[in-house]
Length: 286
Image (tube, rainbow, N blue to C red; front, side, top):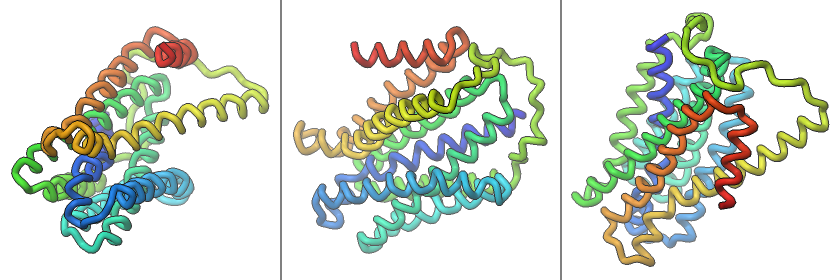
């Protein structure tokens, strides 16, 4: 159980690291290739598009392949993408590698989240918050590492670190039993407040709720992805902050995200999903 959970959190940590890798060194990357921020926006867009394609693709493949194999392929795809960007090939290849990186991260997150939710049936909200904390921790650490490397004029080695970690996770995926049948669900951990079966809703109500959640995720993912990749560039271009310090702005952003995700695991033990979501929306408006 512990090996299964720790491996899952480690995979999400890897996802957080690689999803912020390009954004952490974007100014240096664009300067190296002598391209504009317009081209940089296209690079970020195609990375997000890869993630968008990776989600339904991995869901489709889940019914046809073993989870362990999909996780191995996802981690290997991330590793190859990071190695490719480390080598600084022609910029067109950087775009391709970032696109493949997005697919790999999406597949990794979908498979891990699916397994965790099927194993921890009565604690789904809690374990998902733990996964999101792991992801946020990775996204927080990557800019710190990149800042140090930028100050040493070795920014490209940010991709070296992530590629090594991704290769390590390939080995982990081969060694850890990810099949849900091998994991006990009889743990005495506290259930979350919404662990009871959800009420049956009419088809029209289900579609309304799905549409509402889709809009919320659309707005959230847009803010997360866009600000992730352009915060350091904004600080350099408009606030005259030196590159190694500007990258730390991404870490500050993820500190706030991490605090919110840690708090979610505690709050969801006390209140239901509905009250938690309503409170979050009201807080955003204030």
